[in-house]
Length: 283
Image (cartoon, rainbow, N blue to C red; front, side, top):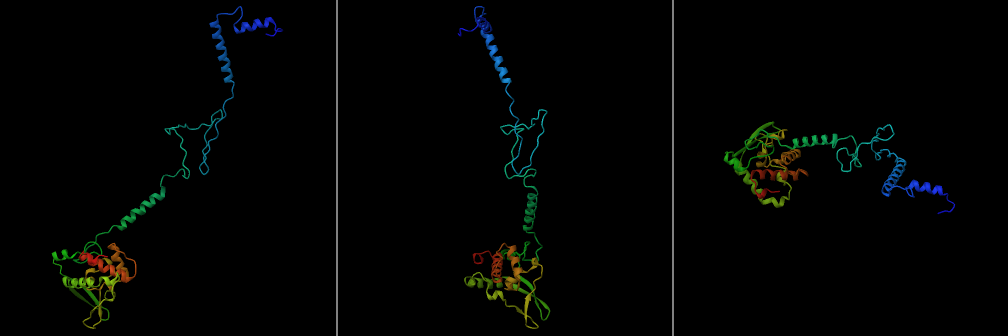
């Protein structure tokens, strides 16, 4: 101890700390001393400055800026945030998304309507059979078994002579005419090489009874009423236009692009396949 220290100061310090000759019970003194330390610690903590205000809520570039209200102390009133993404969680939008637009939007509705219209157009509609050998589907005919069972042995159609302006009806025996066509394809399929021969491209027409000119088959503008079986048996499919031949290929799901001799070849084999589904008429 410093010898220059005043004895009275030493006595006062001992009394304030609870020691010295006039000290009280040590247990009681220790409790008061701990309370004194806690009070000093609490006052020190309370004296610390308040934490800074949270930074302003900002959104990533390209998004709408959100402004939140403030309380009386100038602090932002932000919505509650939870770590588990539960109720009240503030979800940050993913980059590249645009706020305020529902998923899909107008484009999804427009695309769905277009898809529905396309499906409706592709659905084949039944027609009234224009001939006893025709089916309710356009560009399709019954097979031989059906025709024989229903006693349809004669196929007829009309031909027209342009110089004479006369129209006649021609009848073909189904078995006889199809037998001729079957034999021709059987003998020349390898030579044809997926192209219609000259006999098919420039068919031999029936001569007119008056002027002896060739009479062409009557083919109306309505493609649904084309007499396909009559043209097949008479080997007069070459009188059809390219557009009419492509119509047949389209309705029967056949390849319809290419030159006329190619499409004509497909039409001949397609009709023969409908009449007699055998490997000889496979494309």
